[in-house]
Length: 441
Image (cartoon, rainbow, N blue to C red; front, side, top):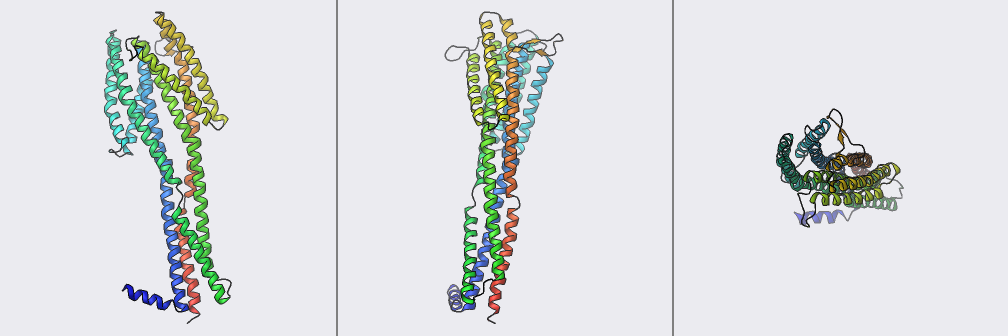
């Protein structure tokens, strides 16, 4: 059958009508292939860009919020313990809000994550460990209300669970979702090489066929082939323009949005770690030492503040306008103030003036005992840092959303348009070649 078909094609190629039929079939097949591949690649890029906007980036944000909520809950628990029984209502509210937020975000993340993936495993770890953590905190509170020193031990156990299991799991979850965001972004920006090559080949084939027609018949235009060429040209230009704009916008989203968001989230995490360790320094009162026989929590506080300063310096470099730099500069100033106030608190603690040190770290209760006055305390400086970082993150998130949404919009409709234009080109090719064939009848 193959030999017979080959022989028929060879025989047809010896006549002009036969050659025209072969040329028409080849051109029609080429423009259909161009349209089909373009539709497939455009759909693939659109899906990846849609994942960036509506799946991986929101999940990355949720993972960062899970970490922040857990770290802030640990900080609030230590602050409430230091405040003494009964704990101020505003501190209790902060703790409960953070735990509720983390629990809700874990549920959301679990519904969008494969349980066998890295993210799924970390979510399982968090879901298992969070009830144990809250149980230890409640035991610490119960003993603290009774005035028993055992409460401090339970608080340290809870902090160890948070530091050694929950926060590392949350950090791995954030890293996994950030990696998935990077993968989706790379997939969306990948240039459609196959469809571009087929488009160039289709344009070249149509141009050659019309030139051949002109040389053989002296007819300048073949309306069918001209329509096919126009449709192919429009599709090729649309493909190039859409992918170029999408790549540019997604590049901007990555460079001006996601890169800054990662650094700012790291800075916020380190500020929360430093605050928790600062509180635990007063809870443990030198009872917990590291391998160098130094106060573990004081050493960890210093390490966290150093990392915070480095992250803020990097965030300032990445900020591309005054709106983004202003909150970062405010955070840097507050960190400097925080260090100074901590030095005074540490000096009072080492001198044996625990009451003064406590007031300089967490402030004092108001007359009702329901809330805290934290003027001139490290707690006030921490809140100023956290507030500035929150504002900076919101600004960078808006910038990311704008660029990423524009990139997604650039690819909208391309897949459907490719199919329609390919159909027009194929019909035009068939009609154009058919018009020439009719002259031989």
